[in-house]
Length: 177
Image 1 (cartoon, rainbow, N blue to C red):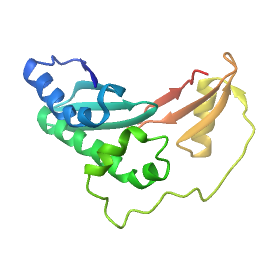
Image 2 (tube, rainbow, N blue to C red):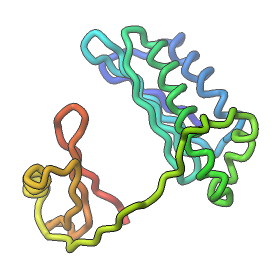
Image 3 (cartoon, one colour):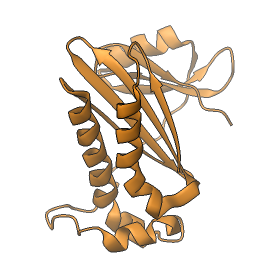
């Protein structure tokens, strides 16, 4: 597994780097060289935030946790990643050809609690994409009371999405295709 560690506004020392590599090492034995882990460390007021993104072939798993102690935030992030993989175990087993790299990991993991239900698509919706710019898309999203909005960018003529972030700001997704 390739591990990229970046500190933004904080220095990542040898002890923290070693601890990150040790914690992510548990995934390495299952996913090997196919996995890439990106770890971002940053301060947020009095707390430290660790964001871990695992890319295993074409699938992504992401966790972001904050705590007063950076090592606690790291431990919490690893737990969230493990939980995501366990939660999706049933879906993964059904589509095992897409997730063949996870067979070994799933064999050694404990089954998720019985109260987890399979996700089901209960509604489909189709709509026309309207050409607009990002600012207009944010305005439309707010007027509709939605958390995100897909639109056709006037300049690039590509489908983009704006979304409301947890911090109250907005994000813009611009896919490459």
